[in-house]
Length: 162
Figure 1 (cartoon, rainbow, N blue to C red):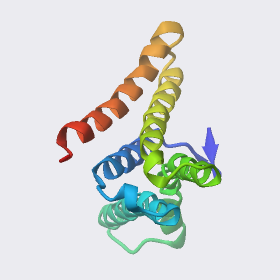
Figure 2: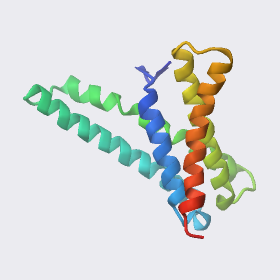
Figure 3: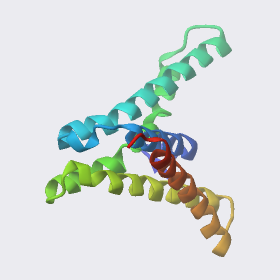
Figure 4: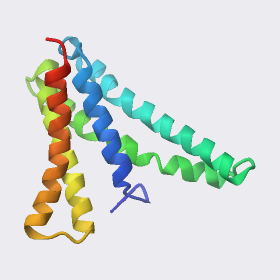
């Protein structure tokens, strides 16, 4: 599977999805946000993770090659970050649908969290399929991703002050 000409990096997309879910779970002002402000809350952690990955990779590359990087090496690092940006797409889609319907921003958070959980199940299913799992083992592999998402949601319920 390719995105923007780059092979889909399941590790990066999974990582960024979990970070977005965790940030949204911990964010306490969601119900007071307008839809555009909620979109900024979704995009901000993705951009931060993208910058962190790019910066850390560039530091590692410079140290490994012990010279300045070429333009193509800089671009290669930038291309590897595309997948991180994809983590914002499902929650932004939920927000867009919420805005187009009568949903208030506060009502979209549970849907965004469930969408994150389903995204993790889907990514886990892709990895399981690539690993050769079929039938019930493929389902178990997909459920493992959903369980990780459910754990993030459960942590929000347990740890968030009410």
